Length: 236
Image 1 (tube, helix red, strand yellow):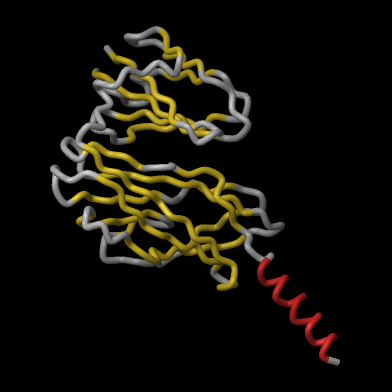
Image 2 (cartoon, one colour):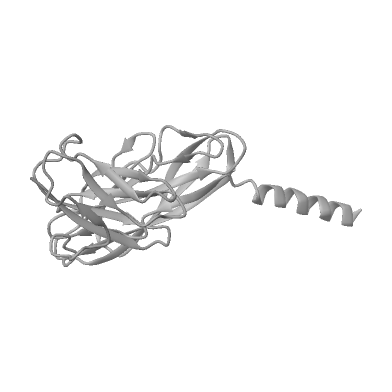
C-alpha cells in the first residue's frame, strides 16, 4: 500500500513539474545604457508557449536588485505600468507554439556618475494554473564609457552608406533561430526593430519611409550564440 501511494505521489509531482508551458525564446543578455547621455536602460525578452493549447499569462515583478543604482523601474506586458505597479492587471494570450514579444522592462539610474549592473526578476504565471510559472531575470547595465557613437562597428555590411531616399541593405550572418535587428539612436534608444528569420542573410528598408530623420543610427543584434553585433549608418 505504501509503495502504491509513493508511486502515485511521484506521478502527481512529476505531472506538476512538467506542466511548465513557457520557455525563453530570446532575451537581452545585458540591457546597457550610457548613464551620462541616457538614464533609462531598456530590456526585452520573448516567450514561447511550448504546450499544445493557447494560454493566458500575467506578469509579476518579484524582486529588485540591491546595488543602489536604480532610482525606479517599470515594465510593459499587456499594458505599460508605472514604477509603483508590481503586477500586470491584464493577461497576454500566447497561442500553442507561438512566441510573444510583449515584454519590455525599463530601469532608471539614480545618477549620471554611477556605473555597474543591477538585476530585476520577473515571474510569468498561467492565469488559470498558478503552478505553471516561469521566472526570468533581466540584467541592466550602466556605464559612463558605453558610447555607441565612438565605437568602431563593422559586424554588418551596410550599403549604400550614407543613405539618401533609397533602400538601405544590411547583410547579416544567418542564424539558427529567430533574432531581432534593432535600430538605435545615439542615446541608445530603440527607434525600430526588424524580425530576422532563421537563415535570413539580408534586411532591407527605406529609412525615410519608416520615419528616421537625418542623423547617425546604430544597428544592434544579439545573434543565436548570445553575442552582440553592431553596425552604424548615416541617413542624409
